[in-house]
Length: 372
Image 1 (cartoon, rainbow, N blue to C red):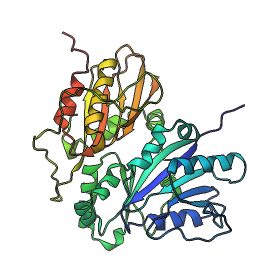
Image 2 (image 1 turned 135 degrees about the vertical axis):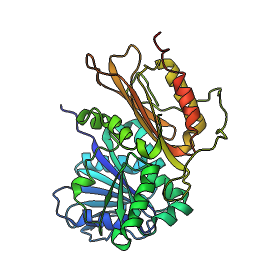
Image 3 (image 1 turned 120 degrees about the vertical axis):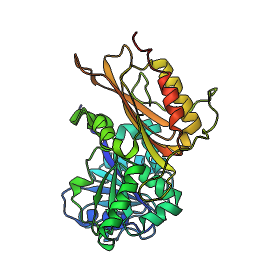
């Protein structure tokens, strides 16, 4: 019997009033031929427009185009498993899931759900985190609210709303700021939620392995495209498919460094959320790298929002693909290195006040010694 394909999930986040619900209402109302389950937190500031056909005691509603919406009343993990169970029994029919976080929510714990629960991993695949940013109020929100910065940091794609309310210079300055905070997320404008579905669904923003299968040089292009913004020259491997680190190591460094970090940019703001890239053409020693990453996650995991990479491991004929959220980290084998192919490590880190110099120093110690 053929194994059922995992259900794709998209997380939609963004600060209060950015336009998340407008976007979701547009998706739910359109006759797009897909049946979409929306998990909405009950503390949402507006809520989905309830054009209901069915409503039961568990707060599951069916929209007029066959999509469904359920209100989260507890643990997301339990809600996902219950939805999948009802789908398997034929009680609900849906092809994918959209999760709307509240405007004041850190999307980290939502994304972590897809790392630490094996049953959720088996039933679902996280396609992308979409962050809606208000072009008119985004700068002020990013200045005042750490949550707004976290939402940008977690994004695989940034949807810029209300661009018609600002001039070109204001929009360009905000986009520059967002790129400095998260260079890996594509930015696109949305107007009253009117954006093609193929721009927000099945983009495989979180599925690094799928991205690399489509474009093997994805990470290299990503790092190169933003090198002019950051001037950075600068993550995780295990020998099984998925795991997470929650260690208690002795640490070579026990707190954030006190070096000055240049978080400034043309916009004149000082953002705590920044990104950097670590690259090397020398292979990592697997044991050293795993210990190093465990140590770094123990110390900086709470401030390390997103990270991913393509790794060149000594004596391993396959590429190793890794990514993580906070202290939850997973890895998988990619394709085999081709004969004569240039083997490189490319690791992207996004977080709050991360000491780039310490990361570079610790990761460099895990590399094989250069050939004499």
